[in-house]
Length: 373
Image (tube, rainbow, N blue to C red; front, side, top):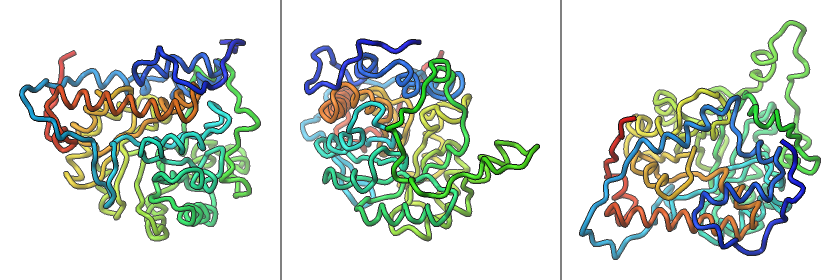
């Protein structure tokens, strides 16, 4: 696929044709070069899990309810002793300069405007300190374990000093295959998209493997974190530690028992094991495994307020929005991201009203109907 020579620069207004949050996904093709769009929109391998993430929501139906008094309805909820206005967080997405020159700084400003929590990536194109100081909204830091514990600890201490309120450690992305769509489109990371947070840190030992050794097992996986590393992180961090990348109930139970503050049900947006189940198909089992009161967030395939409703009904306290925020960023910067969040909130509120739910707790007590294929 060749690059579109008619690419548009980010706008300072919202296109009138954007009527739903998912519209940003389609509009972004006018603002992002084709190879880069394939990289952002794609998952892993043949994108089987990516497709499942989206399609799996259609299996669930929501019952309309009638004659409910919803005049005191709201979307507020409490998590970690803090109140949030909406159950919609901005997921950690790497290299956001791919979509906008100001990347993560614009995301932070949009999150503050909409009173949403932003998760800032280790692989951001602006430093965690610059992102933290760019707005006053709540921010969590997404951590990738580094080859050196000294460097990992440095990231922890920097995030604490910068005012982040939680550490979200991603544990499911130590090794993955690229999307064949991005490979075939010949995507190359631009020279200005640099993971500035880890500049100067110790590099992976992949290049030092001996002849005949596996590039996967003795290469990439020698830097992969283990349960011992997670225990170490919990001991070292002065912030709540939340584990992102959980699909199996047994892992969820172990994470809870280790003392982690919460978890994120996620398959990395379909960007790790191609062939993994859809995140939404794992959510209810994980909620049942950890109990009603343990914090569980959800990531994977959210494209509408109806999707958010279903995720909460199946056990999520809040959801993370990944690709949609980047698409909105490319179209209209912070304004676009804030507008996308507003649309999602309004879509969620509309679904709540039609389903007779005045609060998020009411959604949690809602039974969805599983449709036959």
